[in-house]
Image 1: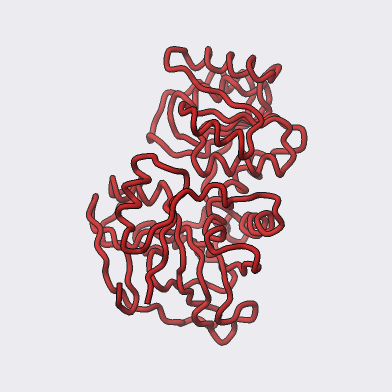
Image 2: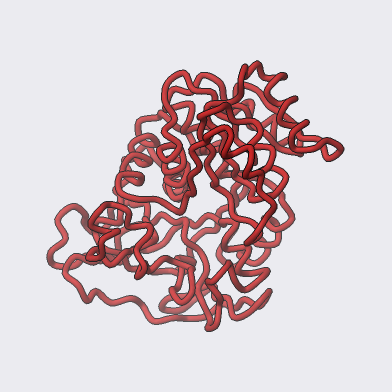
Length: 354
């Protein structure tokens, strides 16, 4: 596709078009322009495509999709010191204000003025060129591919969730959902020293992959059992004694959340990593009587990206196994359909060619 900055633009539900957008210009001396080479499809991208909104984030104007990307530095501002033209980088796609209390405390993911790629009203990275501050680009060593670099974004989410849950050596960790984020949570828990990592899903082929990738055992929930019954069977089949030290839900599904609360040991930690319905029936009595530590998780904060990049480049976590498909930029919409149908694990889209 020829053009100055060809982009994959969402106009409304199921209505995407290829458009030529203006090439970004360096306006701050610390900015970098990246030639995007590869972008992964995230569930949030698909959700905007199928629903036009996620919670309060509503697509009102045309928006470029994509936020899991890696590329090559195309231009740098005069104050940039750590990068040069030609460097290969992975791209942290959300830029906070840097001035509010949240930013100054390191919780920039909670910044009310966050400009996050492919979150209305901000354009995403499925384009030829994208602009970021220097410190939101992470240089990749030669032995790490750009494809792997694109997966640093979901890996950073896995790192954030694992840190939020305070996973430590010897812990037992249960993860509901064997999608890309769930799998990366398992990989991070393993890297953090968890001794038991139980993958939970309703699809056996996903569980089989999880066992080869990072899980130590697996569990299939039954639709014919109550959350309490599923939790009791989960604990018994996996020798979790009084329950798991940490349970993470990466599905957003009500029944999984309910089962999770019943599967955590007294005083254990429950972390909500998946987004789902705005309101659900929640087992508050069990949560209170167990005195659980309950946390949410939203993107990533200070330290998550550097740790994710370090874990990838040092081999403590591998992501290449998750890449199950790669298509040209012109086939982007077909790739979205493939992901919507639940095929594969992580599908990548090549950047526009010259």
